[in-house]
Image (cartoon, rainbow, N blue to C red; front, side):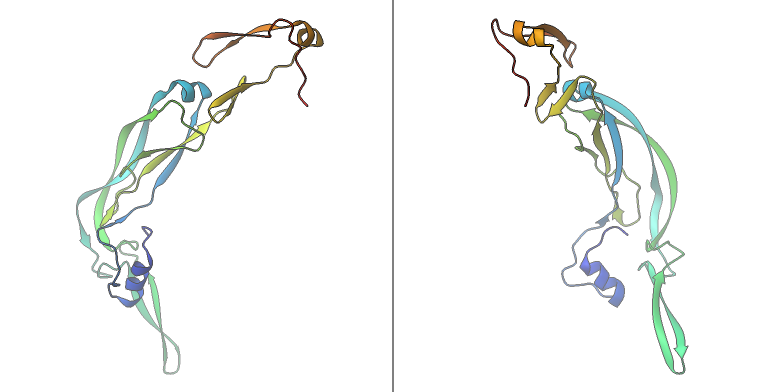
Length: 201
């Protein structure tokens, strides 16, 4: 667990510290939550209060005595006459963490700021707010922006597109129609005098 690198694997199998092992504690897994946001909120910006529940550690974790803090134990199995197989399995005492500790569930309210102009699939990161694990930095909670479909506007990068069907009379003689913008303003869209609107091809 924890996304360790090759040196962690080396240490696990051979019990030594690989020469290039990185300093400092490893980091726990990140938690991703989808956040459905309207196009209006992406245009104007919005702050949303969301409740999360996570596990926090009580007191100081102690190294697991069953596995000496390795998270795995070695077993010898006889597979034939004079033949012994060494098998490595996850430590059931500490669930592979290498440490034992007490935990509790903690509820917290996060203020998620959806900034103006944020995009679909963009992340809002709260560092260190995931579940706490012994001898590891807590992972992040990421809120992933999911843009809701809008009945009028369609987003194309920094542009807003509106599709409108015109009658032949409007295309030849001109048109004028009103549209409500995402910030509540009413916009008037009209053709220029004498302009003939060409159909899309």
